[in-house]
Image 1 (cartoon, one colour):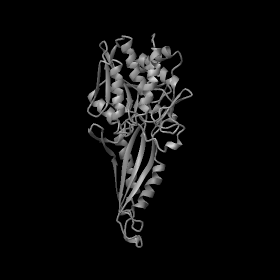
Image 2 (cartoon, rainbow, N blue to C red):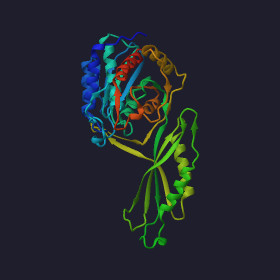
Image 3 (cartoon, rainbow, N blue to C red):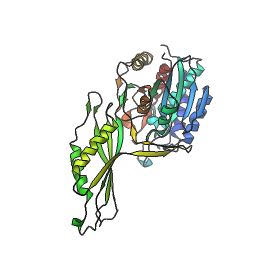
Image 4 (cartoon, helix red, strand yellow):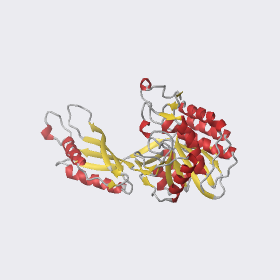
Length: 389
């Protein structure tokens, strides 16, 4: 496949990516970034541009009747932390030594800018893609995927490309994330007479020790499932009173095929065997309520689904061959170590792959930066994927 590139717009691509970085957009505060994407899509000639109910910004380029393809990038990012720890200001969008620096340069405003401009190339070159091409800048990926959950329900697509960092190689899946709430209830008393109460700390200690030895599901590609205790709190919050209750958060990373119900049942059984006399316990799948910048409210179970696209999936096989030809180099197929919005879209029936510029070990760090050559290369990659039949 011969993919012509428009060299004279490369500076515009970098300028757009810089403007996105210079528009901070924490989850729930993506309005300014969404407006930047909307205006860029309109100026590039997208046939239709709109912002949906939850604040996702979408651009459509109609195709010639074939299967649709969604290019999915998120608008939000994690907190930048102490700006003094960064080599360059986190929201400066500084270009230095061939690198674009700043929070969200890799995760993932660079990829989003490239997706938007790949669609613009289709319009400038007068190419009618085989199927509808939809580019989406989605909200609140970092806190549970509000935007992509909404898209999965309202905008069914046959194929989806997730732009999370992959060094411009392909990704075909990842483990999921399940947040569990473990609650223990005892009987609170004055700390000077502990024998009169039931202190849930001791049941919690038994539970945590047993948790370390819990058998893990394993997969030859995705590795083992893992579980990590993260947050713990107790009530009442007085140092001279034994607690009436303890709340523990577990972060479970599940391999594809490991179901949430089975995970909850496993933890319930472990907790039941850990409780001392008089102590009660409960395990729940945590839930979350998010409010978008448009005022939309979505409440859902706090989980990112795992997903896997099989190595012989036609979309993946074709994408690998297409990218290798266009980029004139081998394109590897791997998996992500972290969860993405791809799980929501795959659960809705889309065939999902990942392709994005940047080093994934730099995301969420103060050294987040994106090589400009990878940014430019990713445009060629997205443009090629958009033209696959």
